[in-house]
View 1 (cartoon, one colour):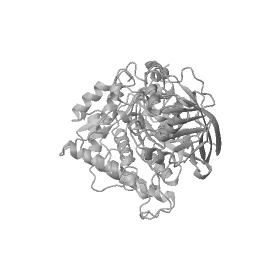
View 2 (tube, one colour):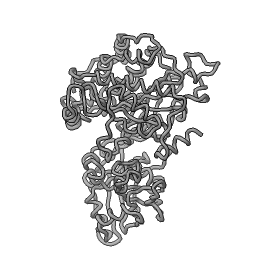
View 3 (cartoon, helix red, strand yellow):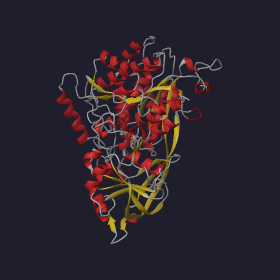
View 4 (cartoon, one colour):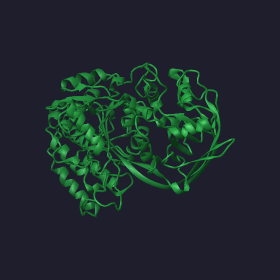
Length: 571
């Protein structure tokens, strides 16, 4: 561990935070968005990133001291900038109850038990991973296994892998990814839809009444190797304590070769079953094999907050409300707010480990936090007349599965129908001025023509998602807002930067992903150039200004997968 600041009393820490905040240069009172954008400071973003990724915050893990300090710092900044509290009970904090579940390997067993022949014992971490979503210390499974192909129910594609089979009280076995397609109108062709994500497969299995699920891992279909599955699922898994959705006693992954063994025990061939599962007419089949197991976990309840502040628009206040107060009328009058999000949590630290043992997360996501803090400062100090609200949310537990933003989507500061657009910032490497951006998801909204025109005006070429098969749209916080119908996307950089060719950008991104992403070395670098991040703050501000002045709200395009949720929220 690198030397930490000797600031035991929190009061002393906050005093330092206040000093930093007061040193910022206020924006000029100009009344125009262009002048406000001009006051965005790359140096401010640099200093905010440097501070939020300091050892003081101990890797910003949810529910621990460092994560709590980070939330208090962000709230302090919001208060200094004059944002109104939009959390619980007149505070900036939207307090969330979580439960951390960590499997105890020596007390956890899994076996495949055929009707005839010997049981086959599996090794935790090597052959399978499991998490008990019921949030109890122990659960026991002894249930038949049903192969349900890709585990998908998609009426819009006339596809139902659960048709004609009852999986209540049973364990489903399914393949990771989407049913294979080259048709962009059928499961989005080569691009991954949410139906292909492991989160959907667990959710759908629970909705259908299964007690457990086994997702078959295959590297080419998952777009990542078994090590990613193992590392992500053998450490503590975090859940929303009060999530009312159905849950599984055993949410599991299994290695491809384990699945091959399972099919062989059933007198079936894995390759043939994979082929059949990808074709219309597939029928789920109950295998002559049971899953028998005991899952023992340590259970850690804790709290961690989203930090939410807002600048209320004039159109949202009733005559009884003063211009400086948030009133109940926000939930009664029609708003058309723009929401800016970034997650502030990271991976914490490893106690007792010699050397640098803190996951500081300077790029992931110190950059995004620094950017929305600077944006909040500029929006507030510019004293612009706002016809609709501007909301800022620093969310927690993104690294645990987008949980903070999921809670935000379920408990928005104004009704979901009154949030016109969410713009998310996550892990924007400060390595120069971007000439390209990826706004994956924006093209699915009615606001895309404005995004295109604004990008052109900012000298930013819009480039497509470089790996659509990986389903990146479903892996950042904007997705949580999309699920409740709010049009949402992240602003991501391309690979072309001023003064460099695209190969240089590719090399920079590759180096970060291979050597620093989710590693102890994701530390603040004094040589970083934040001018590009400042440019993307201005870009986001410009989009937000347009959103709150539209004569209509933003919608998903017709037949988009989130259109139904949007329409439901507007009723």
